[in-house]
Length: 219
View 1 (cartoon, rainbow, N blue to C red):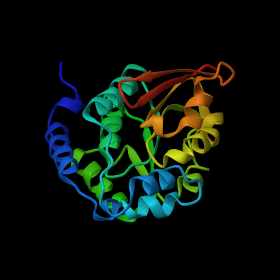
View 2: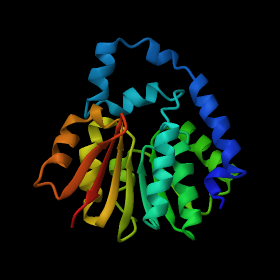
View 3: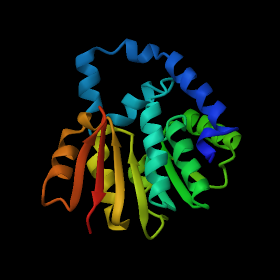
View 4: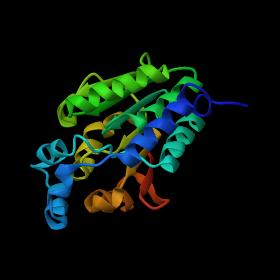
């Protein structure tokens, strides 16, 4: 049994993109001290400036997290997926492959850096997923505020860490009972983790692997 994820054209495309991501450098990041980097990462007002400086950095999910995204979307029969933080589209390709193997659906991505949006769209077209994916350019607090499916089956949080809670609150009314929320690098968003792990939050949430928080909407 083969899958879209493990066959051509997607499998060799992902191999190439992961190799490019591993080799990528960011001169702007090298010029920021560790302390300043931590401050900007957790800022709720300077995130656009910070991530704008990182426009050459890929910031992809790991291979393991990509496979996890495919597995979760595929096994739950997801049809409507929203992604906060598209970057160059590696995570998007994994999710789109699951939608294709589920028989179709809609993936709405968000990315404020225009050059990354352009590259991600190229990668999606090369993989054969342009018909399944819409990438919205701009601040996700605005681009994901309207024109969404009535119900969302899976949400990926992989953008500015300081906004994880805000994006969740924005989309929460559309999360169906049983919807999955995957937060990458969740340790960098302690307020989000505290909320999701609270018994009163309405979620069941557990850490997964080294850098992922996996949550399910209870109702």
